Every structure is written in structure tokens, then in C-alpha cells.
Image (cartoon, rainbow, N blue to C red; front, side, top):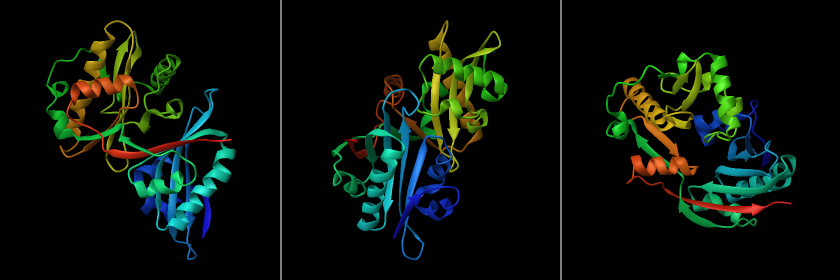
Length: 281
């Protein structure tokens, strides 16, 4: 078996393990993949992780969120490569994993990671469920609320710069690097004040068709109203453009999102995942 980093040169071989959404994420600046092939050069396993705080001045952390392997030997080789190469190459101080299957986590717990179970930060709902929420009710929105496509690239970049300066980046470590057209510009919403965007609700439509809210933030006077209006704008557009069975993947990574989801979807919980961590160095 042979282990190597996953790159543009070999990613096609690992597509069945990764899926199209994770394969697309590997183009992003903080995402890394490791693959192992068998003696016939066929994909036998893959691990994908995201670097956290790698440019913030804090210690770099790694979040392993995909680990698939066809044999324990393949899994052990992936973990060994991660430990011996990725940790030092990326100067990782803390490694964590969050995986849906205990068997996937086994190679990490056997290598010194802690082990536990918890509810995932992620929940999945459909647009049909969103349609039943108060935010989806038809309402007359003020003129300063619009879709992301109404912003110029310069306005978008300036808005992101100001929001990042306020310490907000939603669920995207690489928000500063994501172009405007990485998001669904029709569904994503904005709030405009004095020709500048003082609020953004950025929604990604993944290659598989899943809607992924990435950032919801507004500031200034009546910022809470702006948040509500942007949610309503996005919900209305999504319901108009996409079928009711469209999946919406919501990450409750921060307290604000957790509180909002608890209010809007109080009976919706995440699935059980296995998680753990290991200090490196």
C-alpha cells in the first residue's frame, strides 16, 4: 500500500470515498486530504482535515472530519502518515476528530486520541421544514434588503473585510479567501446602508445541491431586524428556486447560531458522533 497527500493529480481516484462536496472543499486553502491506495493502485482509504487558527497567531489546530478506509491496515497507514507528516508539516498543536462511526475513530483512539460521544453540531432539515417556519412567511421587506447578486465584487469584499475585523467569520476559517460567486448569490442576502453592506447572510450551495448557511451577521442600528429580514429574503428565494426536499445543513458552531436554531427549530437535534483529541508535539 502507498500513502500520499490528495491533490488535483490523484483526487479522481478518491472521489468515491470523498464524495463531491468534500472533494470540492479540498480546493480550499485550509483543507487537506491524505489517501492510501492498494497494490493495484485503487483507493483503499482517505482522511480529510481542516486547519483551524493557522494564521491567527494562536496554535494551529486540526479537525479531522472524514476517515474512510477499506481495511484496518489502510486506516493505520493513514493515521501514521498524518502523525508523522501532517502534524509537523502544518505545525499542528492540537488534533481533534469528529466522525459518525466508532469504527472510523478506532485508528485515532488507538493512537492516543481521547474518545467520547456527543450530539453533532450539525443538523439537517429540508426546505419543506423551513417553509413552515415564521421566517418563511411572506412579508414586505424594506428596500435595503436584497440578494448577494445585487452587490458588486468590491462591495462584497469590503463587507467581508469589515465583518472579519469585528471578529466574525461564521463557519468558514477561510472566509477572507472565498469569492462572491462561491456562494449562491440568489439565495444569499445582504443589507445595504449608504451604499455599503452592513449585513450578510451567506449561503453556499454545494456541488451535491445541499444548502449550507456559512455566515449570518449584521451591525449598526436595528441589526436584529436586519438579521430577520435577511433570513426571510433567503428563505423566500430558496423556496422559489429549489424543490421542497432540498437539504439544508446547519452548523451550530457558535453560541449565536445555537441560540437561533434552538428558537427556530427547538425539536431538531444533531446525530450522534464520536469525537476525541490529542495534543501534539
